[in-house]
Length: 175
Image 1: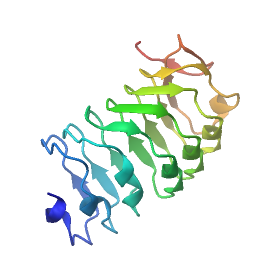
Image 2: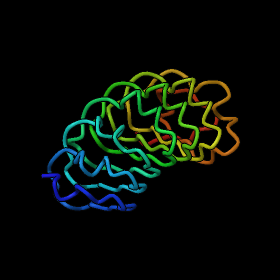
Image 3: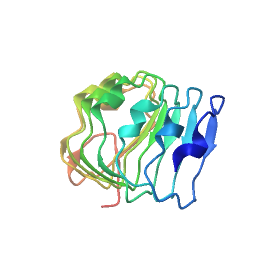
Image 4: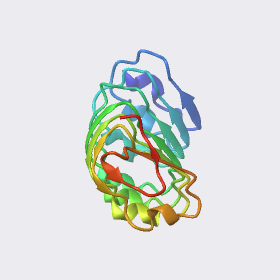
């Protein structure tokens, strides 16, 4: 029941990690206008990521290790201009990495490792000039990292499965 999260209009930070929430992420929490930092790792979250676009001010969103979190990464996540750090590792996400993520001007850190993502690393990720960390290993990606991705000035950590994806600057994952 998400009712306990209603009317928390001044809430800036929440960490419900380690709790057995065993439900979808409460829309009442996601829609809080001041929420900037949300952590819900190891909480048995279920459902999909559709709630993400209800987070008007979020800067950091970490939802790691929620195996019941399914579906694809919403392409309209690219409209979230405040997001700087996203960690969706070790969930059960499927589909591709949306090219629209390349529109997230403030994005510095993106962890998508340990899911069931397919396809290639989108060319539009080269637009992420503030990107420092990109971890996409332990997925089912293929092909080559786009030319120029390794030239991103701030990128200091880039991990991928080198046996499946060609990359000249990546750290190899553990597949």
